[in-house]
Amino acid sequence: MKPLAIFLVFVSVALFGQQPAEPVKEPTFGLNEQYLLMKVKSQTYGEYKVIKETTLDAFWKTTTDSVKKGKSLLSEVREGNVLLQAQLQSAQAEIKQKDQAIEELTYAGTHINVLGLDLHKSVFVSFALLTILGLLIVLGLISGRLKMIYHAMKDKMETFNMLSEEFETYKRKALDKQMKLSRELQDERNKIHDLHRA
Image (cartoon, rainbow, N blue to C red; front, side, top):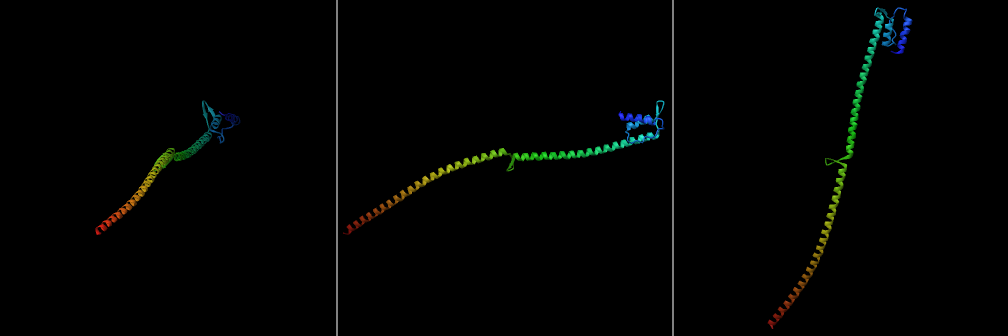
């Protein structure tokens, strides 16, 4: 028990012990203090206590008020609990959304979508570098092959030009020779013809 309650009981016994019991009208006392006051102020009959109805009614009113107050507090606590539960669920949903957004950002930061395929950026970069390197090698091979073809074509053109010139020279010489032979043949025909006339 509280020392204050015991002190109040003794004070009330000393002050009100000789006076007739009056109903307890001190709302400042708690249930324990009112119970002790009621017990002290009541008269004893054998092993029984005789309590005035007004004192008992005041105690009952205080008890029901305390119960109502407790129920009211319990109701407020329950409402607060419901509100806190709603806030907790809202905060959890918000945290879940933020976690999901962070995961999506992390995934978007490490992956790239190429032609409908989700690839890790390092895989894509490696693939792109290998593709570029492969294309450069193919371009180098094609360039080398084109140079070889160009030199071969140049050699063929030079050979063709040289053969064309030789053929033209041969043709001219053959034509000259043919014309010379034609003239000589005509000269011989003319000589034979002159001999037949003479």
